[in-house]
Length: 329
Image (cartoon, rainbow, N blue to C red; front, side, top):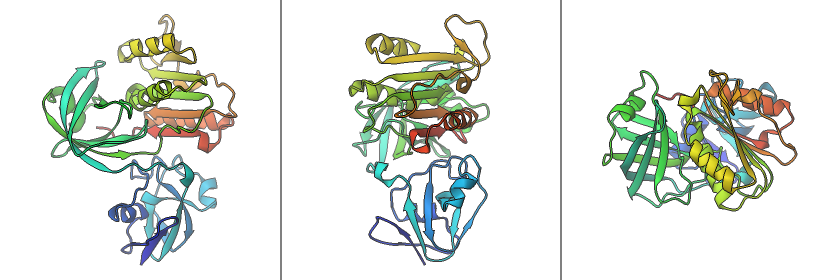
């Protein structure tokens, strides 16, 4: 029994009941995925033929209309016979070499009361190439491993991550209370498909919630460093002033780059001067949508609401690239 991925020369052997995703990854094929639980939609693909069984998944990840067109989630599709699948938007798929790197912590600094900014030096296993907006598996010790987005740009020699302390979370608690400069960590990646589409030259909308600023910072800085001259607008949603960080960077970029502007949106603190109040997706003023590209990152509730809002206002799915931070601890 086998899976054939269109465009790949060799079929992949599969055991009955395995999912499409685990079979492809076991064979070493590059395939986009994130939550592996049917929540995010990153691993969507087209089922061309085959006998499969679909496990439960979120309607946010895969709509009824998409399923009617033969789209499935690779992580929730069990294979029971020879199967053929096709990547979606294969022409946009960027594949970087997969790396497992040993890194050293250069800095673990407080960005806010509950977000640590990590700066890592790659000591072995590189070079590490990735697209702005991607993430990696970061392992701090046995049982202390999570996905975190790169806040650094692909052109920077060091890696940066923003780790929010989740109450009761083992990994984030370790980072918040024990991780220190000089410690060694393992970084594996890159992963994710909500990355910068570098061929796009039109206006860009960026939406970040909390530590979702990490991949958005990478996308923003990469855009501006590489001379993107169309309008770039960022909406940064946080609960209150104490949850805001990197505003000096944003202010400096806005002062130097006439095509960049940003708005801070506070969801729990009214009356702050120069701030917008409310849920971030409710205050977004859309520019011309015909050639707009949108990148979203942060809590699932925010990402889902913003995605739905953008779709309702006419953006096509190919114009929206969303990274919801599921299962953080």
